[in-house]
Image: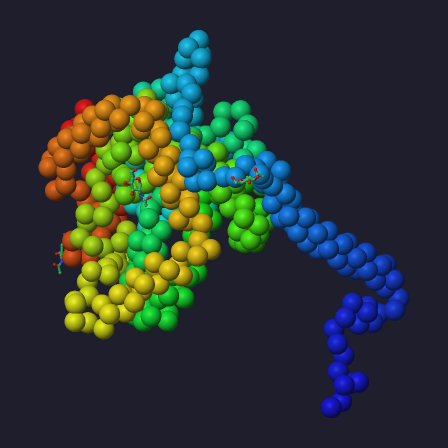
Length: 411
Ligand SMILES: *[C@@H]1O[C@H](CO)[C@@H](O)[C@H](O)[C@H]1NC(C)=O
Ligand SMILES: *[C@@H]1O[C@H](CO)[C@@H](O)[C@H](O)[C@H]1NC(C)=O
Ligand SMILES: *[C@@H]1O[C@H](CO)[C@@H](O)[C@H](O)[C@H]1NC(C)=O
């Protein structure tokens, strides 16, 4: 092989390509390359450093507390501001102030009733905004992982936003994720190997979605931090610091109405603020945004008992009860949030919460009877896309459809 002939592209070779006379350009180029090199080295060091310093931070604040799930479960609270500046909704600020975070931030995790909950987030922004004469309170609508926009330091600045989310049982969420994104949208089958390896990649999905780190720069690589935290047995301390202590409220899909009732009481809301039509009563299609068309959502229950898919799904159940649970913080987080809901309900009064749940259900029942037929979802019952019509009927894609009708019913 004639190696000598082949010129490898190195910094030195680049200089030789330039005419000898052009000394200044060579100098500038050399300096630029050096600066770039130092930048890269410095940046890498920095990221590495901060990743470990994040773990050290957790160690410092929480090591030796012998944490249990019960001990990190918290009572959700909302302290209203002192009566003199009486503003019941200090998080509500006008839309359009680009400098600050939106006042109402719902962290929207895929496959956790997030279209319905987005409808509630928008409805809150509209109704509370109208009551506090801000027009519409600034709020979020799209999917993004919390750490990409929030850090604990930012949350401690003056006038912090109200930050909330809902979690879902990690097993059913992951299966739903597979069927939505892989089976329905990409045409994947139900085979054990493919499905279990994708479910494997969905471990810690909710945790990674919701973590809000104390220091933003320490979070250059959240997956890496998570791995370190699990290895060093600091996982509960981490969930406490980076999730439970950072949110104003976290609800559960499996305890939907109780969660909404707690939000109503904590944040001084009207029942009508929390009533939207479910986004999933629209005939089994998605929101019509993927490839700008309507996709029918396949569900595990669609396969008959004699199909080979049914047998694969039974084997997958085994996997979900065993391997899927190891190194998966979503389960611990879910339990801590479940316990937190219990503690909060006990604090607010079980009876009071129970009554609120009943009122909520009665009102939503009335709304569904009156408004379901006037809802125009982005995808019709037969899968025809009707975005223009639905845009006038819904707050945002399939979120909060028939809201004018809902407004009339709840008054
Ligand atoms: C944790 O608990 C164990 C058993 O209760 C106890 O022996 C140990 O000293 C505790 N560790 C710390 C650091 O508190
Ligand atoms: C969540 O809490 C409820 C009420 O305490 C309990 O019945 C249920 O078993 C808990 N679920 C999980 C998964 O821990
Ligand atoms: C599908 O539904 C839309 C709107 O509901 C309707 O206009 C259209 O005729 C239907 N198409 C078919 C093929 O049934």
